[in-house]
Length: 395
Image (cartoon, rainbow, N blue to C red):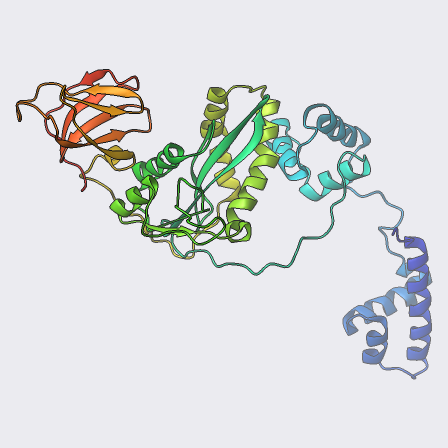
């Protein structure tokens, strides 16, 4: 509702005139007159002096009838509406405002920008807030709990793919994010490996009940914490607690983060004409994520970190698929339809009928281990690639 400032000014002066008359004849003291007018005694005395010297004209607000010194010119309003409608259509106001300041030197505030776009019918007015939610306290230190989740979406071009994100509960910092065709054990291994390589071991891992994270005997029921998946086995080897979420609301922090990514990242990839996964991953990791973390990270309650340096083991030999095999009479093992030929070894004459362990790595390569010793390394096609001497790994 627009306020008629002239009418308001007239009422204010009439009210002062009536109150001042009662004050003049002694019906009211200074304190009572000031209370009626809703001002301090000192301000009432200032108004009294102005009224005595200039009459009602002395009470007029000098700002009435003047244009605001900060009022935007019509050309500036037209510039920002044209910019949004021609180049940033679909961006949220907050997202557009950041780009306008950074790339187009428009220094108006967010509220002004939103009001201009709403008046031009370029963005809709939104209702206040959502449902009342109880806040789940964050972990006090970074590294105490990490969330991992994936969102299947039409992120770029005509491709529908998964975006896998690993973030810190204490700060909402995204440590790892990448696009892949479909989330699974290998994508989860990759996300955790990227965090450990940069920051170290963390305390606990929080995720949904996806089949690569947990075995769930009864659909929709509780997870089996004893019969572990390959991913669960790897976390147990690393001493990381695995926690299952039982509802989307329990993953609220991740859900809201993906809402932000779908709102912003999709528009930025489209704006930059990115239509393939390699380019999308490059933009996401090198351009978008640093700005996202700067805008949405929060300070942890405690400055200390719960991350623990990880050294002494080859992390890839833990964050991989491990399966046992028995060596055939021709010194080969079968895995994923491939025959892995074990080369001659200085440690044994042969490995026939020996129990060995096959490692399937995130990059698709393979290795065969006899106990802690690597006895064969293979590329993704199962062709013998490198012969190693002696590599110790975690039990």
